[in-house]
Image (cartoon, rainbow, N blue to C red; front, side, top):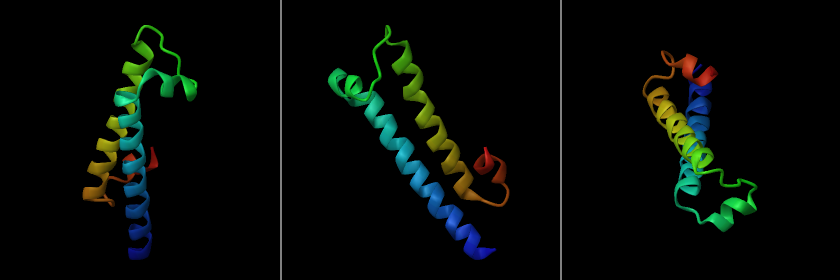
Length: 77
C-alpha cells in the first residue's frame, strides 16, 4: 500500500505541474501562440473560462496531496 501511495503522490505532482503550466500558457501567452494551438479568441470568454479550470484542478490536487487516503475521491474524479 505504501508503494501505491508513493506512485499516486508522484502522479499528483506531475498533474499539478501540468495544470500550472497550462494555466500559465492560457494567462500569459500571446495571441499567436494560442491561435497556433487552435484556441481562437471568442470575445475573451473562452480563454477566461480555461484560465480558471487548470488552476482549480491544480489547487484540488494540492489539497489531495495533504492526505491521499482521505482525499481519494478527488483523485478518482
